[in-house]
Image 1 (cartoon, rainbow, N blue to C red):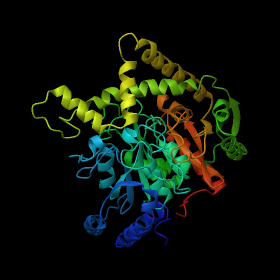
Image 2: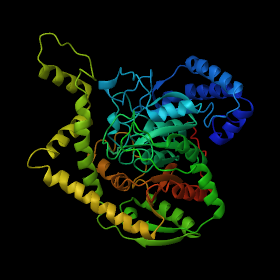
Image 3: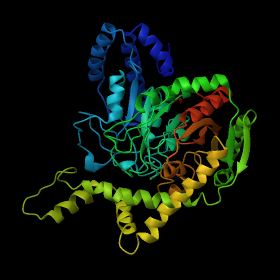
Image 4: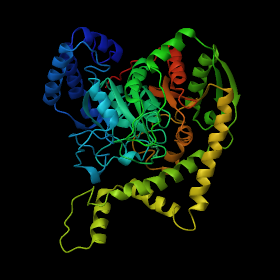
Length: 488
Ligand code: GLN
């Protein structure tokens, strides 16, 4: 069996009948990492193979002595470096947390571990998840495995690149304004931003708390659903987590798949118009595939582009207050305190600790919330958010899903987008909507233009992840774009 490209559900079958195979699998995976990581640079922290091996040996013993199977037994998972892992450095790709070792696990990590997953390392990202290309990382840029001169997108670019390069079987990312879906689209993998409140944020280092969500990333729909099953669920440690009965997403997705319901799908005209021609054409082709079976109609959301302004105002305002905790006392760089007043120390910590993009957003966040301006910007953005939500609720009364290109552009050359912040911010135009309204959205690989991946985004009603997974499975079947690994 090809351990590197095998889907997770197949690996799980093998490992459950023969637990010792996990050792072979992990050693093959580490060989692959040794071969490609130098070029791709997906990981900030990769756990040494021997540490992983020790953990696996005891895990195999536990598995053999118990009759219970584990939902992710032996599976290598890559974790975005803003999700806290006990005893394993968690930097948020920032100098200010360069040596931070969390004393506790995020809820999602505790869940993965209790299901037998192996966390192999922490992946690169934009600093504090602020960016769309993984280039604002304080350490290095990650490269797109499909074209090493290009970005894998961001901010969960390391997790996406690790999957596309065959360095992990599944991964976790976080998505505040598109950070799971953007890199998923740019690397030909599947990525899901769940409904706000479905997955606990406890232990996720906050960027903009009313928008942040952790979500699964995988090379096929089944694995995405299986991973979602493990991480979803109520958590008393996250006050925004929602306590409702949840389906088994994998099973419910298959139930739907076998029933083959015809869905009502909205084609969001403006979200296509914002896109470059090659992306637009490829997206319309996949829409034709969808609409050959499902019932489709074009709709117009004329003010959709204002979502970008509202998103950046809200996210910067929230970021400014979330990042106030990095003061060098509780968190942050250790600097010399002798004979210096607090302001000097605070200034030094934050000047040296934060990169340019983060500083810019903290400054703008403070401005947005300052007296005299907050109603002009912040309040207005909140009003827009409410209006958008109401408008989408109306659309979702009639339609089961809204489709659009995930990203309006092809994966950019390294350096290209970061040099043009307005273009970079506007490249989030299709993804930020789902965060503003709290609804789930998925990115599905639909094809390549000159060797560069394109993804289709599907937004669905709150807590309707199953519908998004069904559409993903439908397209995956028709287009046969799954389990793809780039030849690095
Ligand atoms: N690109 C967006 C931003 O920079 C989204 C980032 C994210 O989802 N974490 O804010």
